[in-house]
Amino acid sequence: MSFAGVLPATRWRARSALPGLGLSLGFTVFYLSAVVLIPLAALVIRPWELGWSGFVAEVTQPRVLAALRLSFGAAAIGAVVNTFFGLIVAWALVRYRFPLKRLVDALVDLPFALPTAVAGIALSALYAPNGWLGAPLMSLGIKAAYTPLGVVIALTFIGLPFVVRTLQPVLTDLSRDHEEAAATLGATRFQAFRRVVFPALLPALVTGAALAFARGVGEYGSVIFIAGNLPMRSEIAPLLIIIKLEEFDYAGAASIGVVMLAASFVMLFALNGLQSFTASRR
Amino acid sequence: MRNTSRYLLAAALLLSTGATCAADISLLNVSYDPTRELYKAVNSAFAAQWKAKTGENVTINMSHGGSGKQARAVIDGLDADVVTLALAYDIDSISQIGKLMPGDWQKRLPNKSTPYTSTIVFVVRKGNPWKIHDWSDLIKPGIQIVVPNPKTSGGARWAYLAAWAYAEKKPGGSAEKAKAFIAELYKHVPVLDTGARGSTTTFAERGIGDVLISWENEAYLALDEMGRDKIDIVYPSVSILAEPPVAVVDKNVDRHKSRKVADAYLQFLYSKEGQELEARNHYRPRDPQILAAHPEFKKLPLYDVDDLFGGWQKAQKTHFADGGVFDQIYKPGGK
Image 1 (cartoon, helix red, strand yellow):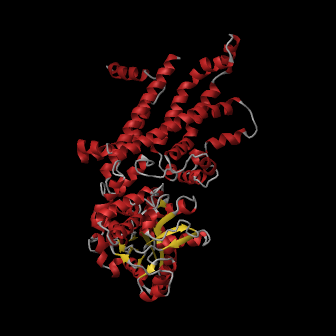
Image 2 (cartoon, chains in turn cyan, orange):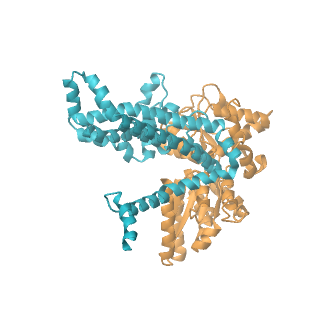
Image 3 (cartoon, helix red, strand yellow):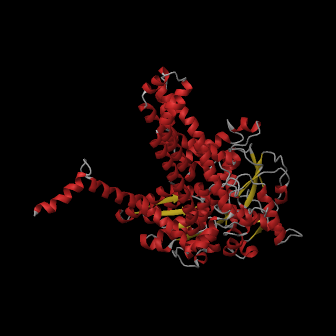
């Protein structure tokens, strides 16, 4: 009799060789709910005070659309720039030995560690028309600070570590044997990179770009000082949220927040899909 | 990040009010952006006076930020004993939305609960190269104006209303012409910072713009900081009477049992000593004798928000609320 009671339990457990699935999964669900899902649910519930038409009217105002376009556009450009240069940085840090390498390696983390407001003030001082970099740019006719370009600069700055730190472990793990094998089979250096190394790096590259992008979309502190904040031109979506809050328009602020959340989620989800697709093709 | 630290501070205050002995009291004064230097001076003077009078040690904690943001923080639970904000509308919000004090709070202290006033002036580069002397000079071609965003900054709202008052009240002026003038003026603004201090930095440190529209007190502070060889202050022909009010937050002081010291703190702002400190920190004192002893406060015609705009509630609704005049001038096609 006792057999019947024990058997299903053993079978259920037998699925994983590792003990503790029930406990750890339970904890994961609880933790994710408490830390992520409940606050997000509070955000998603709020705009319904306005009703569907009120919500749509709120987020389709030209000014809101312009701010969303700037935030997502600048974050995307920043992510693309970082993907390209981040790959070079990661490559150099993993593949070569050079003096002060550890220092350079530590520098990469700086945008992580620096309080965003400090980064913003430093960047705006640097790129202002009287700044070290702003003055030469100005003489070339390029206005960097207080324009959408300034937003791109700030988001590029804060996004760099995400790409480099995602790529580094993958590059380190990538054995040179494959490249050498490619070389013995007559591949040029470029062919070896394009056909052997790059496909192996692609999933990590996509993840890094996605992380940099996601961080950039919501970034406030470092951008606000360099953006110029002119409605319709250089006003980022998070600032518009702050402005709405200042007007005690909590529902309006939450509406923009929900749109940003939904758009970010869809993009990250798509990128994740892309990543597993490329990984499975390999 | 700032908010977090503020809540931590509030939490720490809550804990400490329960734990400290009777001889130690603390107050939290939630104020707006440019008053840092003023309240630093006021707080130490008041603490010394209170100690001499009662033997109690009083510590006054400060929180500074954009006026509207500060009001929202108090409504959302920041444990302010007193609020000293940039304009009456923000304290009205605390009273109406937060229900933390009665609606007639502004009648509880003299002079509409504003112990000191200020006004809006221009700051220009040394020697005034663009010859900016009055509001009409601001919209000359090629001039760039630095001013904060009225949506987030109290000082910027006073600046906006001062410009409006000039355009409506000048000979041949009207509300229609004032709106056109304001729209033109903001076309000359290359950066809208979120607070007064941000705009001062943009103008003074980053070298952006030809003129900064600023609080008078902030302008003098910039003069002290930057040095008189870099910038000049220009008084326009007319400006606005900026009245930054103060109030005790009833619900919070009752809970903290700090009403007595909070009242005394605000009364101190009206005392001779308080008024002198305010004047030295470039706020116009209400006391006529002390005002007369500070000739740097130039006399000029100042419009009153209550007379010209029907009070802050109305001004806010017409000009700064969602879809108000300020939003309209930034509408595409509305330019």
